[in-house]
Length: 151
Image 1 (spheres, rainbow, N blue to C red):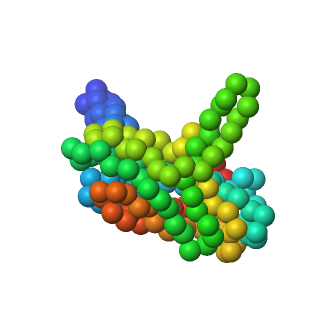
Image 2: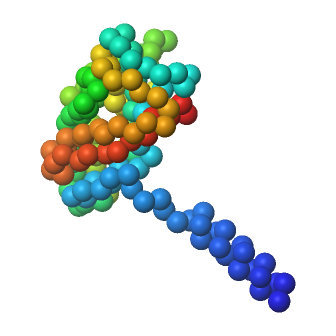
């Protein structure tokens, strides 16, 4: 009996570990997971000098490539950025879009593609939720509810 209980416990742990998390948003073959706005240091941010970044994973489950072409929010300006290292210098530039190949994932993360927010007009605190509107060439507009976090 103990072996059966132990087996059932191990099976439950393995199934829980293997289960995929529900997407934060999904539409027309695009799935968004792990979306978060990073608030460095956990302090509230507000004002013209504040900049924040958002990170997420975008999965294209369709048979055709798509492209993230823009982003908008109701709490300031938002744009797509890419961080590159050229020689010994790290550069961050605004970009016009991010290709999302068919059947693949692209991670928006620190040191790579990400979303930048500038000229923030609303106080944001850890635990708040905000909506980010992502514009895709084929999937259209996808609204992603995103938590503000310090991690």
